[in-house]
Length: 379
Image (cartoon, rainbow, N blue to C red; front, side, top):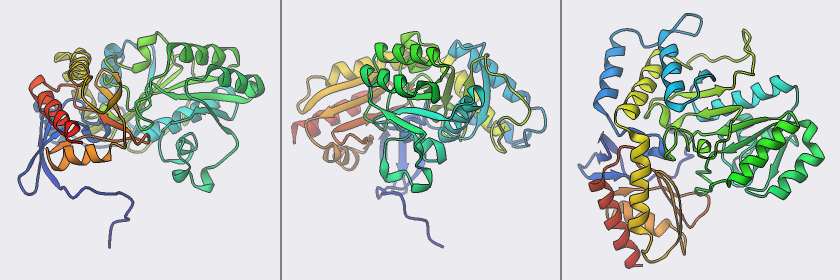
């Protein structure tokens, strides 16, 4: 049997990782400045993370959600305290797409409406409803398309108001990323988010903040939208939540009422996943990683802002988009193959996406800064 060939693969086979570095099967060392799409939040194989997972394997790794699991309670408690959202409730699942599916479903249960508003440049996942609110026709199959999903323009208040004026009474929810990642590190304005919140309240629609990539300290705030003082009805999270262990979560405002069977999952919130997520929160708190994301992000921006071929830098914390005056693929390939540094791209071809671990250090950022300078000066 062969693998279903859907991924364009770099000819690199990582077999070992530690901190912000990877090693391939030939012994070559690579600096990880992408974290597997912002998944690696506390660095590869952090000692506390490793120890907690190994200890849990000696106890119990899985049982279904038909029994009590005090690790889920511990995770919810620590997540509430570190995020400042102690009055919210938590539903655990396995991925960002699954979190968004459950958020959309819960919103529709809540108000009995079926239409969903999303925005240009969005990416919310590849599953049924999540892909229907993703702005990429290439990955939306005919079975996923439905007129209930309405696209509006990013950061366009006039268009937003027009959509609500015409269809507001039918809109169940508005889903928006705290910062668009795949879309090219696009940051919403406070005026735009405030208007969305205002219209959601006016028309009894649910505001869903997709913080799958921009959450968990990535932006220098626990969730990116918290910088603007916006209160979301539902928040979804995943990538940095488990530092590589599959886990997702839906943070739910207390106005939503739970009932038996309303949502469900087989693997979500299993013992190993919870231990991984708890370990991440412990490290984030003990090592002040949210503050480090702010400091290191600012440091990187200040060091590279005058480099040639950079048009703009879009950044919150360690969620960084470097817009070049050309397609970024040549720069990305040179960083990878000539300097052994992993970076990312986006749907906006000129934007190089930078998503290092939240505990990245200055000496590691210096490797990236020096390499980027060399590559850009040689274009």
